[in-house]
Length: 116
Image 1 (cartoon, one colour):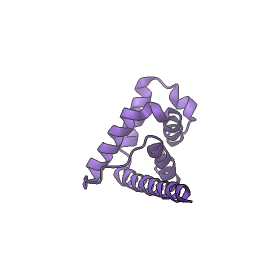
Image 2 (tube, rainbow, N blue to C red):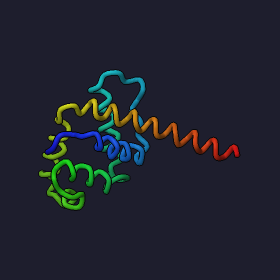
Image 3 (tube, rainbow, N blue to C red):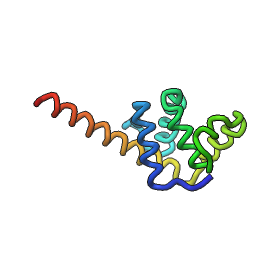
């Protein structure tokens, strides 16, 4: 599995936004934030199946379609490796902040549009 890169933040942010996931602002520990976001992603994965498969497939050197057709044991091993990547908690923290900023921007744009 390759290391995370900056462009991965945008892919993950898109997934989190589609799933309407924003990290709990009351959590301060990076490990807690990571587990909270990961739990929410897993609970709602069916809503962004294609995007998640594409993301994990790209990290693993395959297409999202190939990733989606892997036997459970292989995909589980890839997800475990993903959870253990260096900097993963920072990655989720940044992706969550990016998602929150995008949500605030969309909300303020919608508000401005409806006022005119």
